Length: 148
Image (tube, rainbow, N blue to C red; front, top):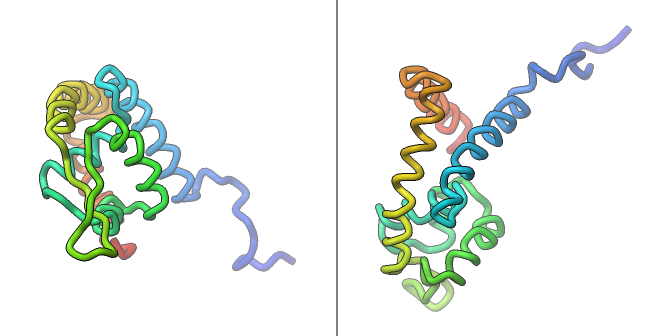
């Protein structure tokens, strides 16, 4: 007799994590395809947009806001720094590194905004604008309920 507490599900389609990750990859592909014309990936666009909205942030603060670990964020910002879209400099004290958007970063973000709107529109046409809004609200609840 199998212990129902430790038994693996027969069908992995009921796995919340897998379903969320697959959906996230699919949606990211839509945004990446559109943003490629502006020379950005969806994650890079999100980083630039966050810095544009909030101003300079420490790497740790940005990682927390983006729900990313510091190492993953470090890999994502390297090409942005290399391309002069953001600058990494000293923060409030010598131990903290701060990220700020450069003028070139603001220009690229502005150019990419049209592509982001195209991706947003493609998703909303396929999924439904009301459903997309409801999905964002549910996902915000997921983040808040799981410690985000």
